[in-house]
Amino acid sequence: MRKTAKKKIKKVIKGLKKASKSHAGQAKSLTSVIKKKIKKVIKGLKKASKSHAGQAKSLTAVIKKKNG
Image (cartoon, rainbow, N blue to C red; front, side, top):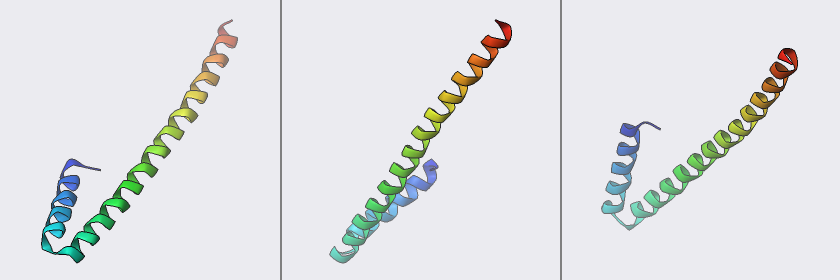
């Protein structure tokens, strides 16, 4: 997420919390949704790293065999 988007989201959440108790609940809900999405992105990035690490290892082995 871009810095400007994060700032806007934080501003909206802060405004909702100030507005009223019912809006504070909405802000809390929005915060949990954002956290879930960020966790999903992190999980995907970790999975991709492992996948690419395995590919790099395989390619290194192929190069060693050809140069061997």
